[in-house]
Length: 101
Image (cartoon, rainbow, N blue to C red; front, side):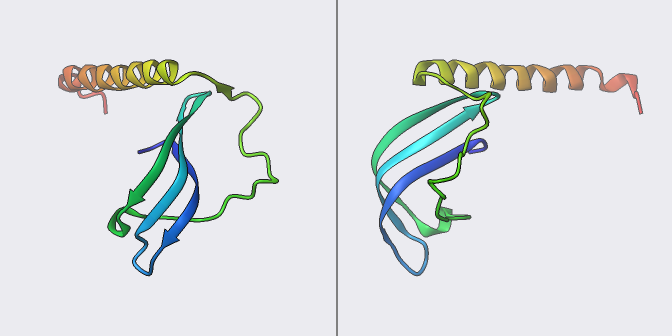
């Protein structure tokens, strides 16, 4: 998922990147809004892992203009962003006949 960050305490990660995460939390970011959604215990198959690393907890991770919102608000923002993207795609398809290139 684009725009998402998971924070967790790793209980186990094996040689093929299968991971068991405790206290997993998904950070969903939409524009300048974000929400940390607790996931609890999470198991991820290694074939789905692209990158795994350690965060520097001493470093400020979010720009100051970011606003923390509720899970319901971030879902509404995601829906609005998805609808705007779909509308843009629809409008682009309708305008193809103009051949603006």
